[in-house]
Length: 180
Image 1 (cartoon, rainbow, N blue to C red):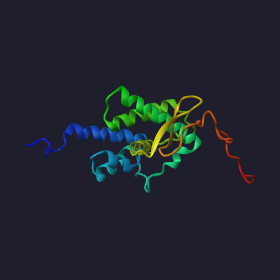
Image 2 (tube, rainbow, N blue to C red; image 1 turned 60 degrees about the vertical axis):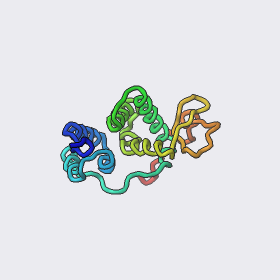
Image 3 (cartoon, helix red, strand yellow; image 1 turned 180 degrees about the vertical axis):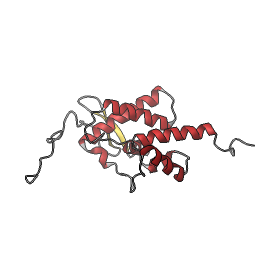
Image 4 (cartoon, rainbow, N blue to C red; image 1 turned 90 degrees about the horizontal axis):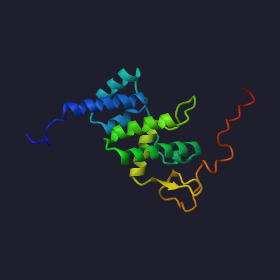
């Protein structure tokens, strides 16, 4: 029997189950799991309910490169992408394991507020897809030298990052309404 037609090994399937569990714990959407594993939708739904204790979120995934351009999102996306690229060069890992390890390191380094991390695992996954598709890339800041996420078609000759030149209201809480 040829190996090309052989069923996936039990070891590979078990590894995908373990990665799926980790991704669910990190808040991954079901569509990410379906795209990145060979597990059936029904199996992923059962696994999701078992691990998360509830059914997965429904609705469309956040598909937009513009989200990564806002001040705070850009800083977090850039941090995650730097970690991912470093690990990708430093150690050979399967793509899902690299995503999980990079995201865990991001969570350790990021300043996570009470609302959770600004960059979800699903958005981190989309970021990697956008970079692979040459929709997003990174540019060095002319002041600090850090590399930050930018649109691939942007003119970036004199790029200054959101840390070196934050917007005027950056980091300030929104005003509460007078009726509150």
